[in-house]
Image (cartoon, rainbow, N blue to C red; front, side, top):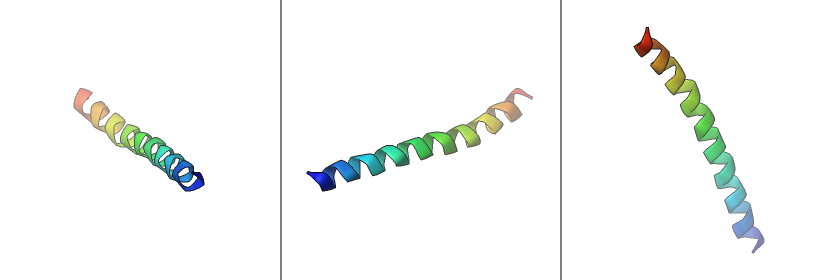
Length: 35
C-alpha cells in the first residue's frame, strides 16, 4: 500500500515538472511565432 502511494506521489511530481518544462519551452516558441 505504502509503495503504491509513493509511486503515485512521484508520478504527480513528474507531471508537475513536465508541465513546468513544457510551459518554459512552449511559451518562447509561441512568442517567437507571434513575433
